[in-house]
Length: 257
Image (cartoon, rainbow, N blue to C red; front, side, top):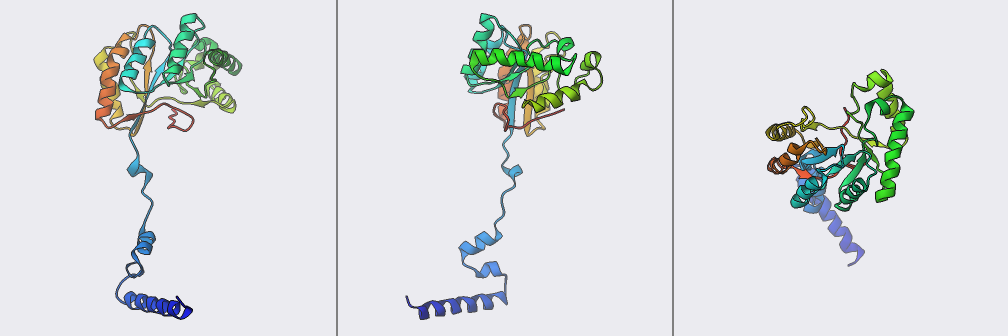
């Protein structure tokens, strides 16, 4: 095509747009590809946001760990285990089982002894690093995630370390590179030594109903048998509410008290 043809085509295009502008808007006069681009808007992330549930188990491994893992395996779900120290052969075997099944292991301190870990910043760091070392030697991973015993706003720490102990510990552990994560849904399985199964199920499903992202606290402790019994109904109930499941990570949803 020659230059003359291109000029004539361009002049005709301009005339058409000029005439159209007298009657309507610019975007309706442009070719469809240009018009679509001119009026398109990015879809709000909220509109595409998937409801996500993060099952978390504190205080293990325990005699219940294998049962929990079997249930998660049955439903094809990965969870996050905030473990404490157990250097026995069985403890190490369970760390490996959790890790081999693709679950995330987080640090919940070695001793989980409030009097010890909350006595000072140095004591907390030392106890946490002790578990770090055990886990690295056992599964080859140093956890990136941390959950404070009792949560980041616990009041028990006041008795052992004073009013500023939690802010000081949080500051130091964050400086060391840990991401801490609390929870926004409690199973209430810590309210009693053995909480009735139905109360655990109802607590989780009721509190999750209003959440887009639910970080659910449960416990992997020998005596918490009803937590294990409640787990299948909790999973099925969350699915009915439209939840998908994922593990916690540095990039995931974080909840802080």
